[in-house]
Length: 496
Image 1 (cartoon, rainbow, N blue to C red):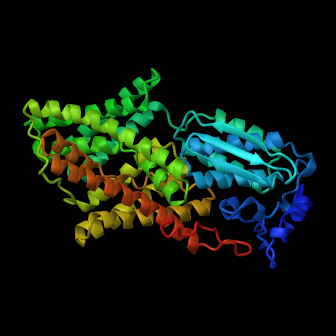
Image 2: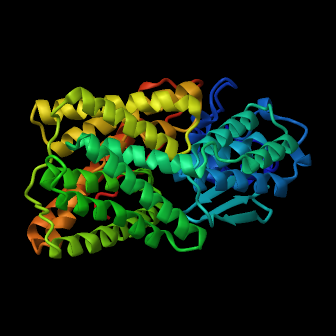
């Protein structure tokens, strides 16, 4: 073999010489130290362990070599992977980070394994020695992109040789102890601002903005109350969806509000749904599926389905009661859009800002994420409303730009792409299609309801696929430092 290194490299060459091709395995040395660990390790994620080069001399430190504490390195690797996975990072990026940490401390033959709730890693010193394995279960998921960025900086410090094993453990403990940057009441206000901005996007006025914001804040506090008593997320989402539907029914019956019936009540309920739709989980599910992590993708998608079903139950119960109480909720009523394009552009950017706060993004990220959301809404409006293009195609194109710009911003700052893209797709979430589908079902229009919910699902998938495609285009366009080592993909199965 022409590549390899580390403990046991001689035994591996001797044992595998009969299977080595005449030209030898290609050498894939790690790029120079100024390359980021994402570039160095993403190449290795899909390579067999026997084809991966060993750690280079640039990564040697007192902890490496034969004196390395293998169990401690594996434990640190799992703990870092746990924080990334719990923060919503994609499975491929979690594996790349785990490989980067293990390689930085001199462990060459490591195999990380990431699923939705379980992290595993295996290290084999040589082909003649039994492997050492360890695992860790992710039992609690917390959406905190500030913590996610801190973990990225820690991995970067480890892979560049700036952090010893003891330093890494200390910094990891500091990350775990750090409090969220925004308190619970600020998050509640952000949920109200998000819902109010969403109501403006679909034709609401100032009164409807306040009504939608109040509904979202009531739903958020109700969800906090249930969470504090250990109630599962399914019921939290069902309960959080009820105030928006209830206030929408009240607005429809309140004839003293100008234009309250029809459009405005729909705007209130749609705004409340925007604050609840699990766009973050959906994007992560599709990303894992497109990158080959099908078990994790299936689990994430099932999580999305459960959360959406909870929202459906909460909204449908209130709508059913409202219709029987005489509310004139019409599923054929078209929501007004683009009455005031500049107002709605500002509303889209405010929605993105509020969404970024809900995701606990760093303060330095808020402006960039907000601008990315504004670009997404502008592209969507031009393609769909002005040019009359298909809504699904326009959504995919706008989401593709979100993914592209988000990847460029993340590469510039050397952090995760999630803070830059997840909030920016907020204005494009299919809140109105979801609401009209549920309303049609409550009024016994099954065919119309199925059509609307199918449209909502198509828009959601367009969002997720567009974001992922934009990310991949950015990676293709950006040069990778060091020798050319393209990331391998799975071959086509051709049906078998």
